[in-house]
Length: 594
Image (cartoon, rainbow, N blue to C red):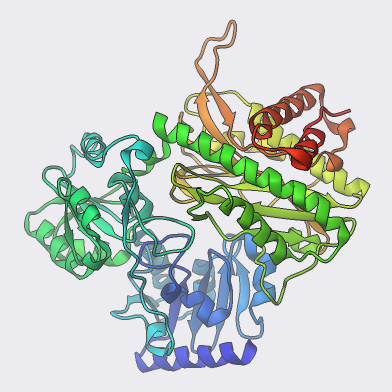
C-alpha cells in the first residue's frame, strides 16, 4: 500500500507542478456531492487508501494532509500511511486552519470546481486570501490526468418510481414546488435525491442509493430541463418525463445557464450543494444568483401518507429478515469460526430471501470486538476478524425496498458480557428509549433533543462523537437532509420526517455499542390540560434488543415499560412470519424483563 500511494502522490505532485500550482484540494466527492460516489470519482481513495464516506486531502509540493470527521479518526490511521499523509480532525483542525499555517503569499491551491460547492469555495478562498494565496479553479482534474486505470463513468438506465409508491405524480409535486418560487425565475437542482424525488425517478449509477445523477433547471413557468445522458433513458422513462421535462446531455448545461443570464433571470441555488462551477457560470452569464435551501429538501423529507405506509411495510419486512438473522447468529456465533464477512453475507441473504430486496442501503458494518469501537468500521478481506467468545458484536445494516429504506443497528454479546459492557449498553439504551418517548412542541429542532440520547452517558463522564440521528429517504438516500438529531442542527422536526435514533459508546481498542431504530415524527395525542399541540416519534424498526446486555437495575420503571411494550410489539408483528425454532427464539428474546 505505502509504495503504491507514494507513487500516486508523486504523480499528482508532478502534474500539479506542471500546471504551475502550489497544491491541489481533493475532496471525497463527485459533481453531485453525494455520500456514495461511482468508482471513477473515488479519487481520494485512489490517492490515500482512505475508504470512509467523507474526507478531504490537501496536497502541496512538499506536504500532504487528510481531514476526517469523528467517525473516522481511528479508521484513517489504519488505512492511510501517516508518513505520507498527516491526519487531522475535520472539525477541530479544519482545512482552512491548515491552509493558514501551510500556504504563503503567492501560492496557488488548485481545486476542481465541479467537486467543491459554492459555499466551500467561498470559505476556502477566504482562507487562502488571508495569507496572500489564491484558491484556483482548474479546467480538468489533475488526478484524472495521472490515474491510468480510472474506471469509466457509469451508464445504468433510469427507472420510474410508480405513483403507488411515490404517492403523488411528478406534475403534482412540481406544481406545489412552484408556489414557493414566486421571487425567482428558476431554480437549479443539483442534489441527486431531489431530482429523483421530484420527477419520480430512480437511478443506479452509485451503490446503495437509487438516486439520479443529474442536474435539473426548474423554471417558474414551463417545462423543467433535465441534464442526463439520453442513453440512460429507456422509452418508458422518456414517456414518463414527456409532460414535465425536456432532456439534455450533461454537456449542455453551460448553454442553459448562459440562456438564463441572457434572460436576466433571477436564479436560486443552494450554495451548500451546488458546485462552484455552476455558480460561476451563472455569474459569468450575468444572471442574478439568489441563494437559499434546496426547495425540494423539505417536501421530500415530509413523507406523504403513501410514503409513510410504505415505510411501515418495509420496516416490518426488514424486521422479519433481521430477526431471522439474529436467531441464526445467536445459534452459530458461540460455536466459533464465523467471520465478520460471513455474518454480513448471511444477513444479506436473509434480506434477499424476502424477494423484495433492491439493494443494501449502505455497505453493512459487521464489527467484532475492538472493531466495534470504530463507528464506521469497514470490513475487508485483510481486516476480516472472527467473532470471539465473550465479545461484543455490532452490526449496522440497511436495505432498499421499492416502498422504503431501512437502517438498523443491533449490538449483541457472544458469550458473557462484563459488568462494564452491561453498564455502557444500558446507558446507550436509556438514551435511545428517552428519545423514543419524548414529546415536543412544533418548531423543536434536533439539537434541542439530542441531549436526551447522551444524558446517561454524560452522567458517567462518557459521550460519542457522531450525531444521534440522520434523516432517511423513501427508497432514496439512507442519509437524507435537512433534519438531523445532533448537537447543532437547526431544522425544525415536522410530521412525516423519518430519522434514525442511534446513540452509542466506543471504547477504543475494546468494544463498541450502538442501538439504532428508525423513528417517524407524528402528531402526538393531546395531553390532558395541555396548552400546545405536541409532536412525538413513532418507532418504525422492529427487531429485538439484546436483553443479556441490559443491567435492569439501571432502568427506570418507565423505561422498562417502554422496552417491554416494544418487544411485545416486535413479537406480535414479526412473530406472525416466523415458525419453529425462530419463533421460539423470538418469544424468548421479546420476553418481559425480569
